[in-house]
Length: 191
Image (cartoon, rainbow, N blue to C red; front, side, top):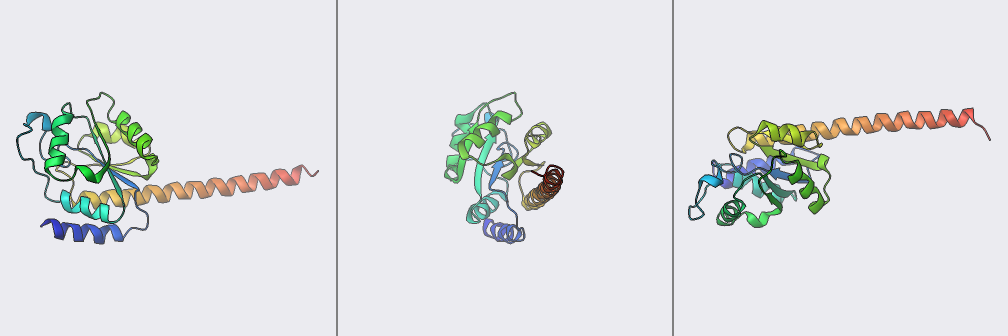
């Protein structure tokens, strides 16, 4: 499936959801491209997984911001590859640095830079430990084992919508309970 066909399918898929993330964050190695960039040379021409360009184009066209969170020890190579692939300018934040924190520092920086709450973010990564740690921050996080593709996008948008709906239901329950408590305390304490 070519980039345009993937983009069309991604646009159709995104259009099916009423609630969308404000920011989609991608890992790089084995998520956007099929290699570790520290094992490559800047002189090489990198490639993306087959669906990535179409998915990124669709998200951008729908007005969803994009970011990168990578623990690569070779940020220079990663940035060179993003440049060579003509996608570097599409990301509002690029946090590429080696870390032992399972990307929680990356997300703190992305949040500080964008002001977007964690629960308005969707994240794709190929490492369970990153998915677990970032999920605890309130980010909808999707494990990919063969790069980002249309199936992963569908799963991510579905889980994001479910998380938002659950959050809204909890908020409504709390508001209802709060309204009942405040009205009952008013009845008890007439002034």
